[in-house]
Image (cartoon, rainbow, N blue to C red; front, side, top):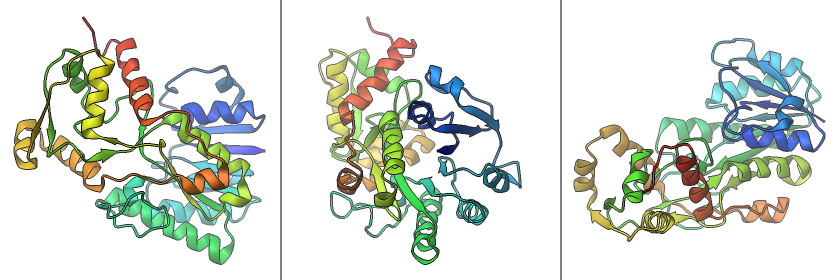
Length: 317
């Protein structure tokens, strides 16, 4: 099949494009042309590379439609208007499947766990709201007009080559250096808020599974996450063990912790990650698509932090 991957050089595409090539698909990788994948693979040379910028080209959706793909995998669509434009353009083609990358950020504060992808969602920020409205629109288009849509919602994406969310709930590579040095870190509250990481390779695996099980996947929303989630405390402990250090974990109430961090932007990022504190169910992905994540939550973050060491971002005595 001809498969167009929009945003193919990013975190997910780094693993997705080679997987599709290895399955003998005709792959067209669309990106702004400004970045390389996070890991190199011979399969990249077998994909067609097209430079297009959704934010700059008013005919972006039209140009995607003109590629006349069997499958379009849209990894970087963040606004409802963009989704509507893409759907209307693709309706004029012979498309058999549109796979939309959403996010667990469509959820707000968690009330019950595990979180069901079909449950009520109350996003906390504009990013989550736009994604949720896009999900609702795609579901309506599938049910009413038969548009062949599937939604996949990753957790905190991790993997070698980029910065990940730390046990403090925000991105700051120096936190891992602090742990590697055997120094103390302070967690907010009691460290019981949760993160649900996923390796980018497992996200890619789920997209391929949904494509290969098209009938079961149509009209569904699947969480792309590891089997288990991590509390901040569990995450911190895993990192001290990883670096062979005695754990030194302190706790501060949120207001005191915010003062301790002394960075409003990072505190806000942490709040949005931690306020939802969910464990997201992959039951429907397991049952319908036979999805089995390769990496546990701990393995996900360990692989990412090992990359920090390999790249000299974190050093060990």
